[in-house]
Image (cartoon, helix red, strand yellow):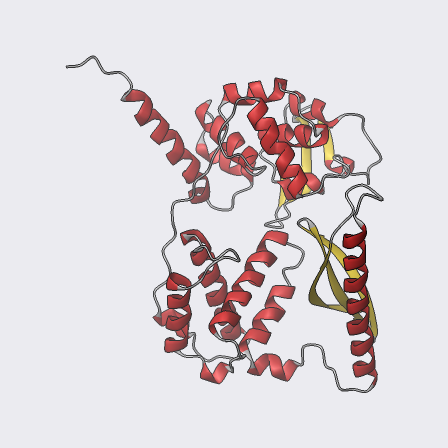
Length: 368
């Protein structure tokens, strides 16, 4: 078995992990070690460079140790019998299968971290019962907090508990558990998500406002005009940009989040944001990365345009959905354009429109 040290950009850090390759199959072990990337070559301080050097040396030490352990048959990456015995180890294996979906993997990883706080030592499947599930539910409700010691949100608690329950449900399917103790425990409530968006006038103003990061500006406006997620825009290739007499410009792509194959018609205005066409395998938005500096550029751009709302890149998708409904597109069509699997997911945007109508109606007051 070959053990290779690999790097992967994760947010504004570079995550280090080991790749195990044997008989055509790959497995991975994340080391929870991170490097600071160099935004512009040669711009890192000497202190940061030295820290990166030490972290790389540590990672290489772990890689060498794993290689020796495998040679001496003392290390078994994800021992199958242990996976059938220990729940947290089993859940970590389930999380690894979701590495290709950054957001989903991140939720699973965070759930496991909180599970380890609740249960510092791995627990055997034979010890998992209703009381254990109740205990983790209570932990999420009353104790779970962020790194800055702030209570996690209602929807985050809901998401973590659902990942926990999904792991138990999968254990039943895999024949490890005969029954799922989570079925006897009430789920956590889901809060109404706040979906911030831009009005049409705000979007027009934003498009006319200069932005320090021109690439990010084009990508954000493109997202507002298409409803695409950042992950799908980031991986968009020129081969996926197509045209026909019936549809005009459209995109044929696979959603990063759902893995569903989609055909999305786009406007000429959206297409014109793409610039000069590259090779079929070239990214449409080259060098578009998720980082704190990009978020800062987005924030400054909003302020410069006179927009005081808390706008993230994902708000571009909310903007597209809300504007489509506001301008009269039926909810079924909007659901299809967004690639939603269930109409109830799109209904959230319709509720926002209904609230705006109610507010507008109450603005007319003649003092009767």
